[in-house]
View: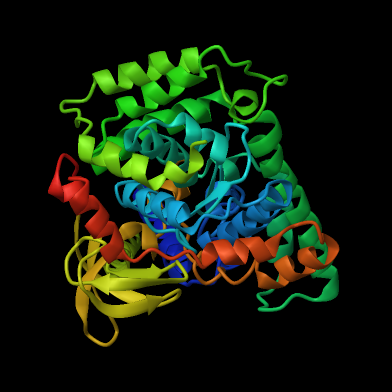
Length: 306
Length: 161
């Protein structure tokens, strides 16, 4: 009798799951079957638990929600920094970043990738969820060629692609959100729900901005973004040693809470270089740096140099 | 003993059928994108797509799906632009490990949306949404990226994929 019951549960879950009506239907369906004696209470609990698990991890945040979270995080970043207003240089960074995004694991996001230069001498790069990427003038000055800049942008695209910003949201926020969303579908919220959701939204932004600007991500995310940077940059055709060379310019900087910008929010350059070197070491073929790219880099950022 | 056999055959057939049907449909989950003639971003655009468009999936290649639109146009879309409608069967009986969720696209307008942003904005004058809107105006066309790759001997024009 075991086999038929298994199939029944699978079929029910599958059919209800398809209905594009969300988890509450799964829960109702499971309850009906329990009431009719078709499945046991323990099976019902299992189905319901699974459907809830589906909606309480950051990977369940839709691309559109990620976009709105990213917009607000970007708006907060842009309240702290001024934009460096140089159309030619900004276009260059955008076309380069976009080219790298094509070779990433996630070239398409809800609102697409956009890159801005921040008018600050601090060395820093930030990515808000969904693809809002910022680099400072100070960081751009550290880059000596296109491979280095491509590697830095690839690192930031890595954070977006692997959704590290969303992963830094505390789980309780998602549970709170889904409690509200669990109620009936509405395209516009009533004032009570809206106030509740906005409150959660503020907390979500707080979690991300804290990671992005203050504490930095968990180290494992930084190492993962470096690994992805090697993958995406070399996938585009850049020499991934651009990342190592960039990190070498950061050696000796004060990392941790007393540091500034990237120094404050990233593990030490020394630690990262070793890991990056070993991930490049596993590659069958490593693209080579080309003078034509270094020349166009120099031309594109000429205005920066004193 | 006839009844359980009947159940298992029926339910089994239903599952197989459902999975087959589901594997064929994908839904656009990003604001806008294009259907392309070939599986690359700077390939010729053959149709404009927006969030919620349903597409019939025909095949896949290196992260791209070949799909057919409701109007019958066949072309390519990157897999990161679509949601695959499926429900992880294994997760139901065994573990909680699952990424896909049915209804995610349908719920897209819910949660943190424009209305929540407007409400947030009204309370937080310091958040610089105007600058974000200007940032979103920075648009680079795929043909600009193609020219950039070509000039730098990158991507298919050099050492990349």
